[in-house]
Image 1 (cartoon, rainbow, N blue to C red):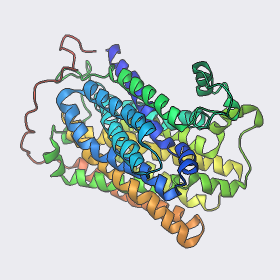
Image 2: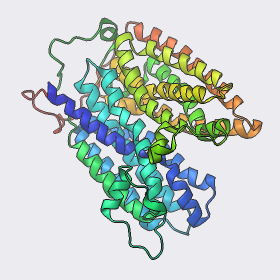
Image 3: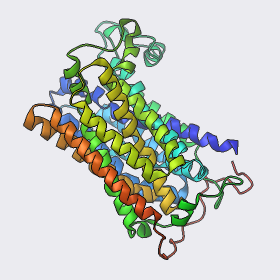
Image 4: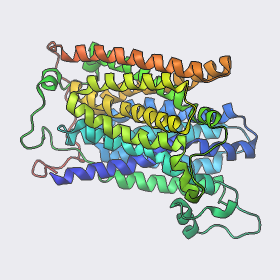
Length: 460
């Protein structure tokens, strides 16, 4: 029984590396300065990576269901590493297309292959704690960028001319936050090589800890709650998409994620405008001061929220947790229009991060609750396309509203309205989830059991 927790360790390693995608902004300045690109040009690489991530989740989930999480995770690690290694060589003066191909398409595909595996393995090993362990499995994704951005921004600086190159020991000290580089780094090309090797190695190592349980395994003495048992079926994606419940979950996810991304995409400039150059961090904190700035606080609570709301949903069920979370988030956005003090900004950053992070624990857990764990990989891949839609709508709509009004009030009010719509949709999800299911055609048979799964004599 205790060995199943090693899956969570592997999940945290994999997700922490994949989560560095949210620190894309650290690459923006070095690339713009060297090639003269404008902001829209560089941001397309990030948008392509997120869109590819969401789309690739579908075939990656299907492959995960067939051959298990370990080998699919390795594919993700290799693709992510290759994207940075190729980028260090191909990105140049000819244009941004090499960046779109390497970081956007290949890197986004690597994240899609890697992301689905830890979640799928976790929900199969922990049917008794789905919300909690899903939150733990994806918490690393929320926190990865926080611990990556600071060291990366130092190492990405160009090296001082005439000085020896930074050694591995110095790089390690910078990565740990024990050194600041004294204004000198290794340059973005060398950093791409370094990060590509590290990312591939860490994701592959974490994937080696992932495996599926034996067919039909469940914890000793555990039985699903009556509400879940009444609605749960082992449906493949055809059967899932035939259910109104799946469609309503998809719409709810779009509203909730769009509102969060609309706000988070403008969080740094908005908080900077309110603070007017003031800082939360005392001088003695040095580089660690980023952890107590508004963006750092939001990132920390983004990770905490995945665990918190996952655990809450284990107690009160998924739809009710969604309702509470979206209502709380909507009220937070409405109150943001009058935030003007350090305390208010600290609270708002924590509250928005806490509730936004909950999306990534509640929706995979609900997908497993209502449509089963057998085909979870591809089923959640389809549900997760809602995040791809939100990734396009949220930043774009928020930017248009800000450009049209020249202020942050309208984008945040609109984000709050979307949260209230998501809460209303969660009520419908709750009603649909409580309805008795109609007879369904059994899911199609899957190929032979994955070699990643232990034998029945090895219950983990």
